[in-house]
Length: 463
Image 1 (cartoon, one colour):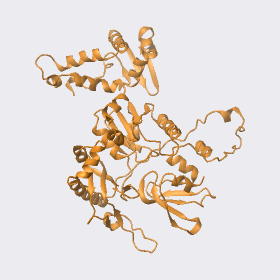
Image 2 (image 1 turned 180 degrees about the vertical axis):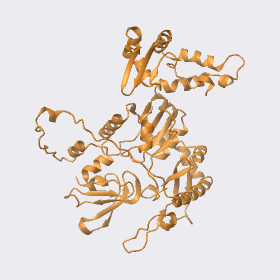
Image 3 (image 1 turned 45 degrees about the vertical axis):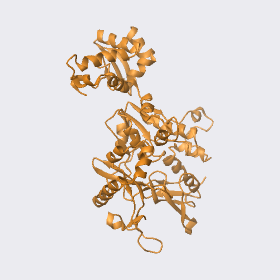
Image 4 (image 1 turned 90 degrees about the vertical axis):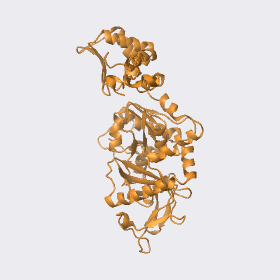
């Protein structure tokens, strides 16, 4: 299958030139855009070639499957019915070593993204502020967002806006006015910067606008990234210990607006991977809920399985977590799904126990303001009532045996006292009781004892 065939399964391409076998242009399957993605079907001895001037990805049909479907080299070859020849000095295809699963998968190197140039940021800031004021007057846009789980307050917090255009038409500006290099049309005239009408979705990191994506009310492409934008991964609440991975920024905002336990990651595409900063955060997460919709990639359940293989290889505590109805959180909310409950069901007890406790504490008791008893004592009492009997039993045994330590790291899971392994009832609970084992594996501390076994955010008066 040619690269052009593969690309047209994901995006709509238009023929830009008929010379040298032809050239097609359109949005990138990974980073979007309008015409940044180029495909030449006659390159690479008929396999085709592609290149994106936005994210820099490029190659042949094999590399296309690796970049945009997350396949390994071998899996990509098999999908394309390409025979991989034996290498000199290696055993033949029928040997036992050929039948073993491939062990040397390529090492993942996440991308790093610099913020846009200063002039671009200045222009983007003015556009975003102007669009914010406009959306306050657009009841239809606010109603559409509310229907997807984004209230007017959430829209304001995330600086969503509306571009009504000029006289109801799309805006065009000189690319140089935004600090962008000049691009010439086929007739030699400079191409203008297109700023279409629609919902303005900025990606802001530490007060700096890195990207502006616009959701157009109609037409193709539906989503458009303003040239010059950084393709940094949107991650909301990076300090949290769990994350929901979704495709669109709007879904990430809806997820963040409806729960207080998990952050959200928007990749922009089901084939995209987290950048270096987001990758580092996810590696330290206690739980990742992968809610990407793999149903529209052409492979359905098999595509999800292939994608989840990569996610589980990179992140040990990652689970496939599609929404119960619809294809994404926004659509699920419209169909009546409680996003907060959907997220909490997928989180481990280590993260949800405090949230459940807080809902049971009378308002007057929070933060120790009650004259009757300390909030800390009440929290400890409720914790003892909420945890399951095996977990409570292990808690009591650890308190009676202060020298015992449970070590839970990605490379080590051990139960020791003074460097020696511990047996008996504690060993049975830790290694043979699923409820207890799951609780330990999702515990934020790598060294666990009776003092920190029960997790609380209220220790020493903190909230």
